[in-house]
Length: 340
Figure 1 (cartoon, rainbow, N blue to C red):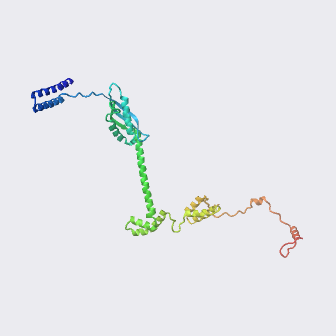
Figure 2 (tube, helix red, strand yellow; figure 1 turned 180 degrees about the horizontal axis):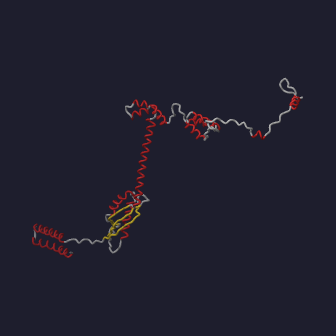
Figure 3 (cartoon, helix red, strand yellow; figure 1 turned 90 degrees about the vertical axis):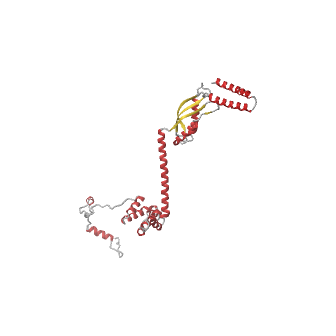
């Protein structure tokens, strides 16, 4: 092939010179020489084929794990076919080629979240899919069949975390919505009994008579929603306890006991129980020694044991009584006796 090139290159100038000589002078010789030169050049391009460049590329399979991600606790796995083309084919450059691919892979994956590993794979394949060399004229490296994966256990863990995160966001939204509803009911809809009635009418248009029937219920609902004291003279336990606490310490339990007994007698057992629990008061009930439907036992007419144990005093004689009277003397005008 090189010989043919040399022959064609030598023949063309000679042919031009011959035509120029034949034409001698004039523009016709110039035109003929240009035409012959162009035809010769075209023939040369078609006749002479370039030899294909010698392929000095090599390949190696790369599989590794531990590629970093934006999450420092999660790592990716890489699989790729590494290609390299060296200026000196007799030298083995496989380790250097794989290291160049790993360096670029670490730079790409470290910017992506683990759940986005598929996007990182596309960027990495585009980046290392074309031949590149660290310095011109030296080793060219590229990779094909790039595949990034997450371990199965890590995928399940990330899926659970993502689900928990979404559930938490949903709960927060629900809590905020519930807070807004409570605020609206307390500060607007049920702020006063009148606003409670109007709010109920807005929910049940045309039910005016029913709203009148529920006026008392809506009034109580408004008071409960806004924390106002109970109406119609109802007993407020907190206010009652506050009043008892204002007493002296030694007077608190007796007062609480008296109030608890009074509440229980009037049927307010809940208040009575609350007071007893608050001040740790015992529940006092009358102790009955005999059945309620039977008569109490009559007192015993037998001589008690104390009478048998202690003898009755001896009767005084008349002489002793007269002697005592003579000693004490007759009574005076003021009732006192004079001693003889």
